[in-house]
Length: 145
Image (cartoon, rainbow, N blue to C red; front, side, top):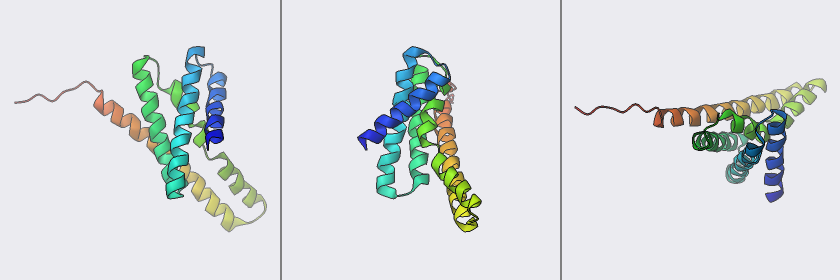
């Protein structure tokens, strides 16, 4: 599990380099991917569901990115986009396409639906954490009567 987290760290660093993120923030971007992958692995171990594990991994990445964005005053996408790379279900999509090529349509449908569900859970997790942060830090306070 430690090796997978280290690989997720490097899997987040390389997209950060590709997107030309500031050198001082590359380590933090890699840490974002490692944290998201650690949460994914932990929840996958207990639930055996890649959908739930991806959702909570994406929430962890979103919370980390929004927190760092406010602390070091930089856009959250600089950490968010490289951080979700380890969670993207690329192998599941590849397997679905391989089953289509092999004319095994029932297995392709099964893998395709799982791929879409994982991708949707990642998107929903990021949207959820971002919305919570915007609600908390919007700055508007309710006036008491």
